[in-house]
Length: 145
Image (cartoon, rainbow, N blue to C red):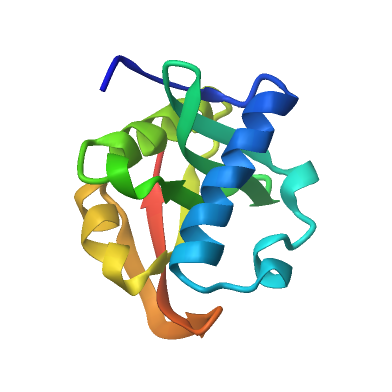
């Protein structure tokens, strides 16, 4: 693995590759329907990628449900690149942007299996578990600034 670059999506090719990562992870691996994955919110979201050379290997999007809160969604890393710090890098890159924008809170709906990862990044569980796309999730929150 070469040097990983974390950034906002710059062009249509990066966006297409980010969507391909999501398709592989959510639709192929996890069996989520395409209708559920492609929910119509991508155009209004900020898109982030992790790149190994020219290849997008991880992605996430961020939406803003309110002026003081961001929501991280659709975070995915290709299977062969997991457990190598890619997700940590994506979260750090997003948090830097949120600090610059002085957004004090970030939330997400974590898949139950990813809760320990998000806890290691400073997120705390809020509320009760629920099901989204037939997968157990829980809302998590973190104070940024």
